[in-house]
Length: 505
Image (cartoon, rainbow, N blue to C red; front, side, top):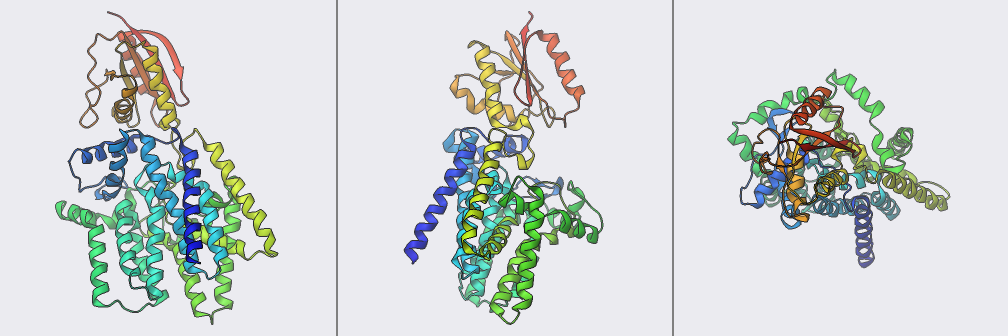
């Protein structure tokens, strides 16, 4: 039996990775300012400049994420020469492991292996999970670390002493990756009251403290260095995020009315209302089962634990809510397991096969329709799609006929040439030289491109057409370019406009 389970896990992993590979290869990912900033920070790590302080969290200067993500991406940056797609494939390996982890967690929670198998199939083909495999940002790894956190706690409640240190290790790693996961601390306390495991002995407690402090060591060092600015800021963190800041009851009401999208994004991406239907049905079924079978203590604990995982992000509403699509990234594992549990109850059982087949088809269709557009559920600008950026760079090199040229850019955020500095840095190996930069002086580490000499015969103005950039900045850049040369060609690359100027001497 163990050999069959191991073989099934291998199949789940490789099939999940294959789907993720197809969804991103060769250039279907997003490279915006946040990604470029992280790439440059990780590059410095590979050069021996170790980092302790991570990027700010939620626009709050006193709060910082950990640096786990930067160390995680430093390896593929070093071996992949800076090409973002190698970072994506590295990330996809761990995203595929998340499908395995969902299978393992579901198998631990339910004696019926059918729930675990359905959960694994949904996770393999999940439009939600596949999208996050191609998104290079610090929260993305939490699709793996959060289920492991809950799995460790569940296993400890079942008498496995190693479960609690595992739980604490991944609690720390999850907070490292995304600071708002501090809500897992009160969630842990509530889960402890639900599961009522035995108190750990001295040895297990020591292991727990060691793993937690190890995983949070850089964040602890950051707090000491910054005189505990993060701890002082945490209670006001919600005022810095880009969401709603109403009363707590209003936020909960809005949360319960509208935050079911994880169901449709995992089971039927094309039909938004299906998320509400399936989500409410699965939740009510589990609540009803808990009430009617309240004498079965094991079932009650399991169901309450699963509902806690699903509803635990409500704790964050004490600080406010956020409009970012990754705000509820801690929920999908529970969503998949809850939905799969409901599907496993369908009778006759033969109906389960076509239903799962339709789920696979719907998700694959959504993945196919997304291809070439980046990860659209995360709301990227068209200009941030790597395939478009590569087309732009190819155009500038080829249109210059091998001669030296210069570029200037209109970017979001303004005046920071981070994206094009990174992209030309790694892609220039194909052509053997870097263009000059004719814009304003760039601060390190974004000063990759040599300053334009003024002798270049061609200047390209690369314009991000994001609606977040006021038109006046594009007008100003074009006015500047016309003082340098004559406009000879304009090309559109789906969100990026490139103007070619022949210089006048």
